[in-house]
Amino acid sequence: MPESAPDRGTLARLIDVQPGEGRALAWSWAYIFSILAAYYVLRPIRDQMGVAGGIENLPWLFTATLVGMLSLNLPFAYLVKRMPRARFVPITYRFFAANILAFALTLYLAPPEWSVWIGRVFFVWLSIFNLFVVSIFWATIVDVFSNAQGKRLFGFIAAGATLGAIAGSATTAILAKNVPTWGLMLCAVVLLEVAVYCMRGLAALSSRLHEVPGATEATGQDGTIGGSVLAGVTRTMASPYLLNISLFLLLFSVTSTFLYFEQAGIAKRSFPDRGAQTAFFASVDLAVNVLTLGVQLFLTGRIVNRLGVALTLALLPAFSIIGFAALAVAPTIGVIVAFQVLRRAGNFAIARPVREVLFTVVPREDRYKAKSFIDTVVYRLGDQVGAWSFTGIQGAGLGSTGIAGAAIPLSVAWLVNSLWLGHAQERRRTAQESGEAEPSGQTLPLGRAAPSA
Image 1 (cartoon, rainbow, N blue to C red):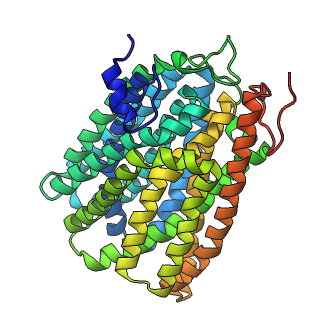
Image 2: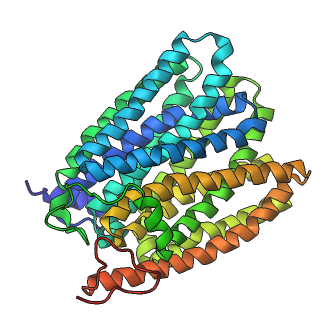
Image 3: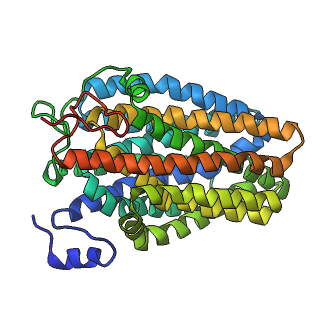
């Protein structure tokens, strides 16, 4: 059914939406809203449990998270190899929903003395859950929308994530002091099932939006992707382009971990009550998401169209250089919280949707396998490096000033990497549009187009 002119007119006030895209946008919004609402109901619970287990133990929890990521990547790659998207995505989400039910039941039945260890396991699990479910969402979105559509629409789609995050964090902030933790977890289970329903609605429209580069008639967008179970690793390591996307995420993750540990320390010193700590983390999340939403609705698409991919990607590392310099000069709670809120909002509103555009110019197998490997294992490897580096710097007695001093050169390297990636994406896009798209089983080296047919 064609969309009505009034619907398109309403959307056009916010974004350059074209005929035939409205329904896909609506399903995408509902899909990511459900996922992020589920995660942000659980995130403040994780942060409080991590603090309760001892900040000094957080590096070990990050190590366990990396091991968990490595353990789950192979089974996920097997599902991608053997099943079409319409099957492996619901299976993955329902696996995580079953895990949440198990945690809720354990918290309901377990004696109080078990709470610290349950919290540590939950901290690790949620850190894995978040990256997997969000990575799968964006892999699906990249598979459904074209490169040109991505530049116009991904920021607007990401606003659905922000609304979900606001709803989830607000729910926990309001209810955390009066509703038991296991009760909040049940809300997340329902939201994940809603996400499965929305994914199927979006997938049903995918063939109408565009032809996927590299997809053959035999496989198509809804067919089995096939390939090797280890393709996520091998194809990433063989491609300078994918390796540089990995470096982008690694540098972001390391610097984000520095700030996360600083915030955790402040929360423990400032709020002795667990309920108050959970409410504090939820309030910070709420501030981040309200700011993010405003940028996504009114600025993201315009920024990308005006600056291009390269300069837009470079905005967050450039701001990080300024923020860490301010932290080195004035390592106060106000500076840390303000920097954290603005940086996270910049990531969600601008850097994240633009980073997903980078995957619109790679073969379909890389969109699920290599992307999953990069978004989960590489990201958590960055957490690992950041966590143990933070511990080493603190152990040397350098404090916040030393942490900021280490983060500034990392942010400079990240800035250079961002500019390089943006130009490489543009070269690949030009090659695809001129009929020189890479074969589905290959990944182009950085800066080199495939030979024309």
